[in-house]
Image 1 (tube, rainbow, N blue to C red):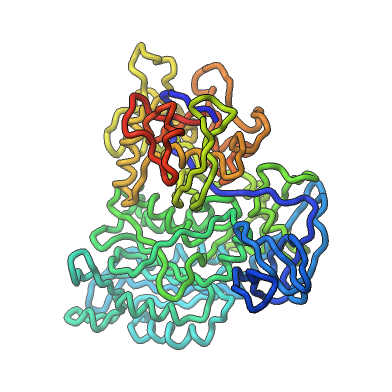
Image 2 (cartoon, rainbow, N blue to C red):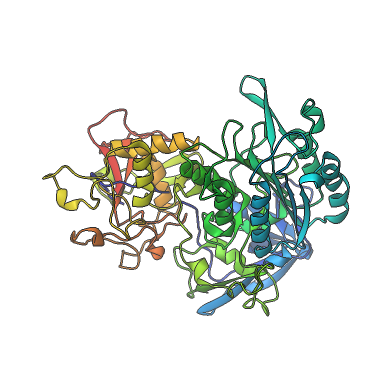
Length: 626
């Protein structure tokens, strides 16, 4: 992976895969879960929990125990009577259709909708019930068919308490999911510097005794924690501070058993429309938060491995960024998890109610870019007889039925949004190459903490949001200095190039973009270090190119082309076969990406073991890819 010095730029980053033996014995757990031991002895240390629908490779047999390959390459022993051997892993058919039966994940899908426009003593709002109607319609399309609703006079403190303390405790079961929507007024009291206590105000809140006649966030969190269900998502359609949110990194989607893990863990996740000092923002008479929430639920928020599912974490991250940008940070949503949930548990939405169809081309020997997520989906048991007929529609408009499952929606890159991120797990990887240029030597082991990185290069559309918001100079070379490479005209780019990567951006321009993005989102965005870029591109299996070790071709990258203007470039994510093992696109070809490091051809020889940031000073900055 050559390093070079150029003036092109993009923000990018990834997820992992690993080779699996083509001919090996596999097993599955007989019961729901069993323990794996450090030694072939049930009295030894427990090293992992095995789940029923996940496959495990048998490495050896000793006495009455199998030694298995477990999550993240760990090893463990299980008693042979606790498992079923499913035979050898042999060449699969050229095309295999598999079914993920989502109805087996959730038995029932419930929604509680509480909306108050007209208060007894606190005046009126003008959007709560219309937002609720919009959300209810979308929830029906997404598979929710059990609704509990309270509007205006019905949304009293006593009635809301009765729902959560009595009705839901009787109705809900372990494998159900619950979506809770509150639209109305709220109060945030600063009880200490920058520490707030939040309150949700029911219809009968008393003006002179608000705190005693409303719900504190802490009380509602206790309600939610006691519910027997597996997955809960609460959406507060109001600007609110004082939420006791815990922010956690989700399980990487490429991890073996990802879906089984996130569906078996409890989820208690919360999203609010904004902070206490924000104002609700509207466009064309519609709430920007609600319209963005709906587009996110319907697939736009999907990140990482394209699996046809939007998780609570994906939705929260999407709203936090998208609403902030759309409203120029006048409204910035909160999201996180609250007490009662497990770290890693995820609420899930899918348009494809019931089943997801996945067609995948396979060869006798797995390719270098074999994806463990799709391989895991293939191992799930389920009835495939109805997988190609999962049709449903809006119950308010029966004629508006959705089409049958469209496999292309899974195979194509997901809808783009600014800052779409992939988590790169912590760990070692081999950086550099002994077969490369002098500035790639020596090959050395680097440890990196976990981090997020953009899945695509920054686009013209995304960069224009920055220019429009700040008045920053457009990406143009000075007239007479490589001006033939200009694509933009003034502060506009040609129609149809919104998803092309932005070019003619200096390192300082890239830094300015990151600073602006950090300010409008409240998150910390920056350029990746060279080590972070290389791990995202290369993974941890010593591959030469992002896609593996095979030489590039026109299906994997845009390269070695004479400049003919904008048509020289391709839209980001176009070369799906060229993505890295972490599902980061265009790490080789198309345009180059800036890194934060100063360039020095001897930097690898002097690199620290952990989290290197490059030389302290230099003349040029590192550029990779391109």
